Image (cartoon, rainbow, N blue to C red; front, side, top):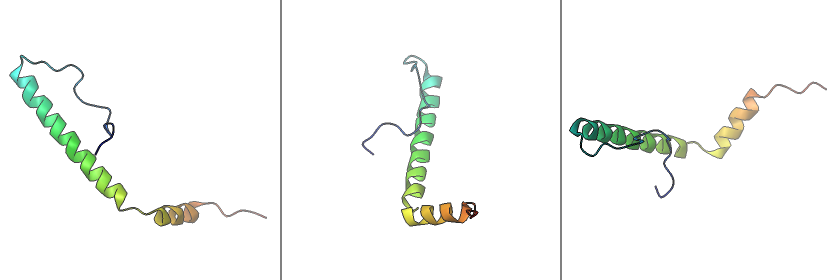
Length: 64
């Protein structure tokens, strides 16, 4: 994606000598990459026009 990570969760201190930690860290990393891909895909499908329309529908009518 070319930017900073979307999620600020993950592995703080990798344990290079622990095989269990390596497998768990890989699974967590894979899950976070998939979640980021799905979120970016979902957000890309939402247009600014749809957001404006939703905002207008939710706005309270202005009393005059």
